Image (cartoon, rainbow, N blue to C red; front, top):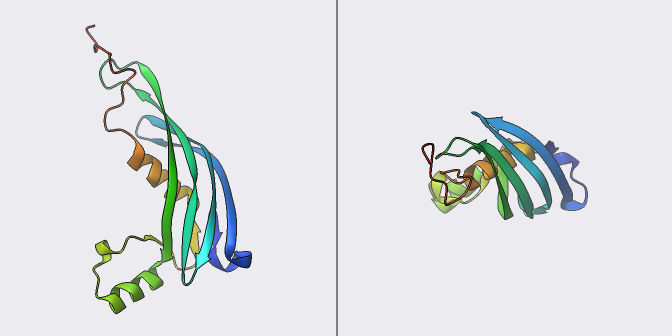
Length: 136
């Protein structure tokens, strides 16, 4: 879902999203994201609650497993022009600015949530901590 900056009325847009995506052999389900994108100066603040699940193979026994997760999202969002101005005026490097950078005219909420879920995914996916593995 793309949110065009020029279509935001009263400097606020409520966001209610749910969708699935695949990454390699894993299936991710963004069960629910309820939040708000609010304009503050030249930037936007995205706040909300995210719940998601991942269906994958256990890294020890290779059985199918589902991992659930939740997160509270609070992120500054800005287009590339505003971030460039901040970097230039404050003398910062790009990596020092804690802003999610978007296209000039829109914010792709689905892409942002996809990246967040991937970052929140544990590096080892286990069906249980006690899993003994394939030969158990």
